[in-house]
Amino acid sequence: MKATAKAHPIQGLVKYHGMRDPEIRLPYHDSISVCTAPSHTKTTVEFLPDADEDVYVIGGEEVEGRGAERIRDVVEHVRDLADFDHRVRLESENSFPSNIGFGSSSSGFAAAAMALAEAADLDLTRPEISTIARRGSSSAARAVTGAFSHLYSGMNDTDCRSERIETDLEDDLRIVAAHVPAYKETEQAHAEAADSHMFQARMAHMHKQIDDMRDALYEADFDAAFELAEHDSLSLAATTMTGPAGWVYWQPRTIAVFNAIRELRAEEDIPAYFSTDTGASVYINTTTEYVDRVEKVVADCNVETDVWEVGGPAEILDESDALF
Ligand SMILES: Nc1ncnc2c1ncn2[C@@H]1O[C@H](COP(=O)(O)OP(=O)(O)OP(=O)(O)O)[C@@H](O)[C@H]1O
Ligand SMILES: C[C@@](O)(CCOP(=O)(O)OP(=O)(O)O)CC(=O)O
Image 1 (cartoon, rainbow, N blue to C red):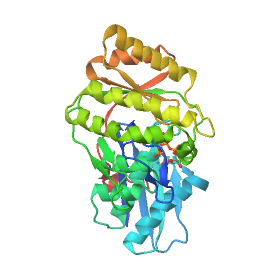
Image 2 (spheres, rainbow, N blue to C red; image 1 turned 90 degrees about the vertical axis):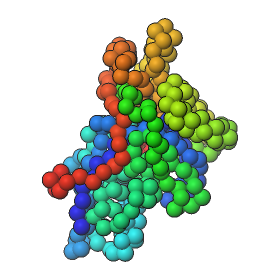
Image 3 (tube, rainbow, N blue to C red; image 1 turned 30 degrees about the vertical axis):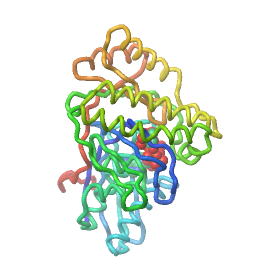
C-alpha cells in the first residue's frame, strides 16, 4: 500500500494550450514534449485504511487550496480504479525551482500517478498511467512516458494518452535552462485559450506542426525539430497575448536571451534554438559540442543557468528511497 516514484519534468516542443474538457483535462489538440534530467520530482504515497483524511505535502509544506484539489483529482481516480476508499498520505519533493516555467506540474503529477498506481496494486502500462496523471495536469501525461513523448488528444478519456517517440536525437541533446522568475498562471491561460482570435489559426496549424515534429524526430533532424519548437513558442505566446487577459509572460531578460541565441546562430553557425512554455524562463536546445558556448552567452544576459539532458520515463524507486 506504499510506493515511491520519480518523474522528470517536460519542455513543451509542440506545445499544449487549452482544454476542451477541464474536468478530466482533455486538451484541444495533440502535443509533443521532451523530458529534462537530472531535474525531477520524487513522490512517496501510502494508502492508510484507518486514516480519516488525505494529507498532501510538497517540499515539506502541507498543500491546500487549488494545489490540493488537483492532487485529489488524481487520487480519487486511482481509488475508483482500485475500488477502495482508503485515505492517502502523499509527500513530494521537486529537485528544481517550481513555478518559474520548468514544468513542475508535469513531473509532480506524473510521479504521483505512478506511485499511486503502484501502491494501489494496479497493473497498468505507462500509457495507461498517463491518463491518470493527465487529471492533475495534461503535461504530466507526457512526463509518465518520458523522453520525447506525444500526447494524443484522442476522442475520449481512454485514448487521450501519451506514447513515447523513439529518436536518435536523445543522446546528444543538451538543454540550457535559463531561469527568469516571474508571476505566472498557467491554468488561467488554458481556461481562456479559445477566446483569442488567434486560437483557430493555431488549431488549423497544429496538425502540420505535429506531423513535421514527428518527421524531424524520426529523421533525427536537430535543426528541423528545434526550429519548430522555437516557432511554436512564438505561436503560443501570440495566442495568450491576444486573449482576454492580454497576458504577456515574457520579461526583458527573456527577450535578451532570444536575441543572443539568434545572434549566435547567425554569426557563429551554432545549432541553438530558444523555447519557452507558459512563463518567462527559457530553454535553449543545443548539442554537447556547443553547450559551454551557449551557457556563456546566456550567462552574459545576467541569467542563471542549469544544463540538462533528456530524462527518461517515470519509474518506481526502491523502498529505501521513500520520503517517509
Ligand atoms: N511535486 C509536486 N507534486 C504535486 N503537485 C505539484 C508538485 N509540484 C508542483 N505541483 C503543482 O503544480 C501546479 C503548478 O501549476 P502550473 O500549471 O503553474 O504548472 P507548471 O506550468 O508546470 O509550473 P512551472 O512550469 O512554473 O513549474 C500547482 O498546482 C502545484 O501545486
Ligand atoms: C505549453 C505548456 O507550458 C503547457 C503546460 O501546461 P500544464 O500542463 O502545466 O498546465 P496545467 O494543466 O494547468 O498544469 C507546456 C506543454 O505541456 O506543452
